[in-house]
Image (cartoon, rainbow, N blue to C red):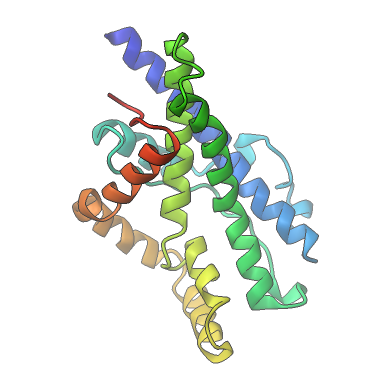
Length: 215
């Protein structure tokens, strides 16, 4: 039993490093492609996880995964800095950059989850567990970051479908409030996460993987 938990911890740790690195690299690559080289100059166009790791966000993700059995999983990486003013369409291009990170996590979850769902790894239980945890971490990052709440990616994505006046007000709110809304959101997730995010997470896990990461 202890060996199983140790393996799960190792798989989780590796999954978090890879998921955060891919998420932030996708942000940086898209920002650079759309005209802002800031991520490139700051060395963020890399898969080196140490460049993208936010230790608080990683700790929250790992603890939530273990203490809730995968029912509520939230976390974040070190944000990639970029300036939408350097882009042709600050609101729309900013939304594209924001969406790139969660979309990358979704695709990684898809690639890891489908082999588990269709029994490709049934004869390799350790690999099956590793792929399941990897998929679970990426699904968690996708869901959490797509919440339309500042400063998460979903907030920027919503701006793209709003009238210009509303979109720029939303942008001002994000710039003015910094990380405080995220801290408030974390309190809500802590107390209500099982009822708010848990069902969504379980649906994604069932559709893409067919099981929860920790059983």
